[in-house]
Structures are given as structure tokens and as C-alpha cells.
Length: 113
Length: 109
Image (cartoon, rainbow over all chains, first blue to last red; front, side, top):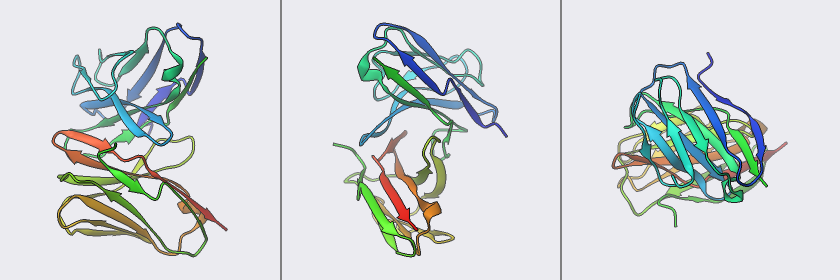
């Protein structure tokens, strides 16, 4: 039971570099999300998707882009990394947006120097 | 300011003690979820409460949703080291899920 898998687990970038975080889920969930977690601030929604081919902005979308080309995959891109993007990133999925629980991956710890 | 305020932010107790964690808001939520997160892992759902005044029990954990659906509490009886972790509440407000900042619980043996 893989659930939600994120790669990589750790990454260090220099300011201005780009990278893509990968998220895959095997539960056939329609909804997928990208959150960032920072101390004292909880989980903040970056972008989300309500189905294959769709994406939408969350609470803190600036500096990030996403794509959902396949239902099982949700990619988060940083085009030009900044130190303010140092964080732990979590991908999650759910069957719908109401009361359905979120299933989270184990996170990607990103450091931008 | 956060829509959901959790308190305390940090709690360190001895094994066997009881504790209560609070999740408060001035807004009404259609439901509220509690998650536990262990170091290096993602949050895992513990429970969802939907009805005002609802009480749910999960072994030594008791969850309550306020009558007005603006607040919730998590009570742990006889805490154990395995209860150590970050406890997050998340409320459904409109069509959005909003997270509190969390309570870090450390249970010492």
C-alpha cells in the first residue's frame, strides 16, 4: 500500500535554480494538493487540483507552478528558487473536497541557500 | 492571524498524565479533522467530527466538537511516549480546508 509517494525526500538548491517535486498516488483520488509546512505556521496550501488536467491556486501560490497531466501524478515546480522557499513540502490527495480526509506523503525537505 | 488557533503550542508532560489540546476559531466549520504528525512523516488523520456537540473516542483519545461548531478539543488520558508528535486540527470552511499551526506534544517516560 504505497498511498502517496513524494520524491525527492531532501534537496538543497542555490538561489535562482529550478527544480520539480514529484507526487504520485495510487488510490485513484480525484483531488491532489501541495502544501508547505513552516514552524509556527501550520500547513499552507500552495496549489491544488480537482482532477486530471486541472489546477488552481491556493493560499500561497507565488513562485510555484503545478501540472496534473495524469490523474495519479501532481508536480510542483520552482522556476527560480528563493531562500523564502526553504520549507518542508507535502503532497496530499483526497477522494473529494468536502469532509474527506487528506492522505499525505512523507514530505520533501527543501533548503535554498 | 490564523483562522484556527491551537493551544498550547508546545506541551511536555510525563508518561501517565492527562492533557487537553484546544482548537478555536470565531468562524463556523462544517466539520473538523484532527491529524497527528510524527517527525519525518506526513500528517495522518485521527478523526473527523461533523455534528455540533459530537464526542468521538479513539482508545485513550477523546475528541469533542463545540456546540456552535467553532471549536474542538482533544483530550488524552494517561499519555504514553508513543503519543509524542504534532497534533493538527483542520476545519472545513466553505469549500476550503484550513489548518491550525499545531500543538507539539512530548511525552517523557
